[in-house]
Length: 256
Image 1 (cartoon, one colour):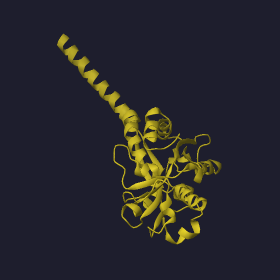
Image 2 (image 1 turned 135 degrees about the vertical axis):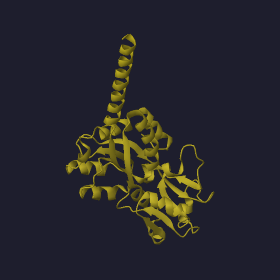
Image 3 (image 1 turned 180 degrees about the vertical axis):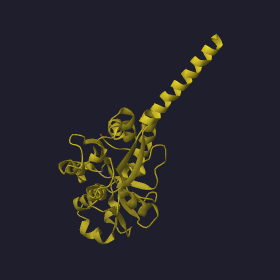
């Protein structure tokens, strides 16, 4: 009888343990995230530790913030927007498409002029005024804040009219990077986070554009109305503010 009682207690403990484990899995959720292309790399790193800590998984779409704005207005099922600016999240809140008070700045973006060729870009960006290149890639300034910042730099340097015929407009900053990396453009305005990847040697050459030459790229995240009742969406936004997530943000060269 005693052996049977011990066996029953062990069996009951195993069943209860299984139920607890199953409950933990059941509480793990999924969140649909729209992320600005410049932050796709850092988010991939953050997603690993976020999933390990919470069990929640991310379903990520990367692209231009302006394009996401249009898609969200049209009813796209994104639950969190991690934008490349602060204006888009504010507009979504004002339009009732995002939760009021949920938007916050997770990073300050930094712009670089980049070439896949070593020693092609000098430390002051003087190459912009020369004739050593035929094409300059830039993200669509109407959709991508980094593209708008690139236009600001050209105008601040008094080069916009001269350089305009050489501009190659990309749909997003990811595509602008692709144009340069494949050699379809000798130069491109991209994010520092795309060329200064932690743990990897910098590719080519770049000029870190002085912040005085373009408006502050304040990047905000916001909880969309579609994710208002999703605990995983709220948990992701909380995690973005955490020390581990901010350490990744800093490692990729963003400011706070």
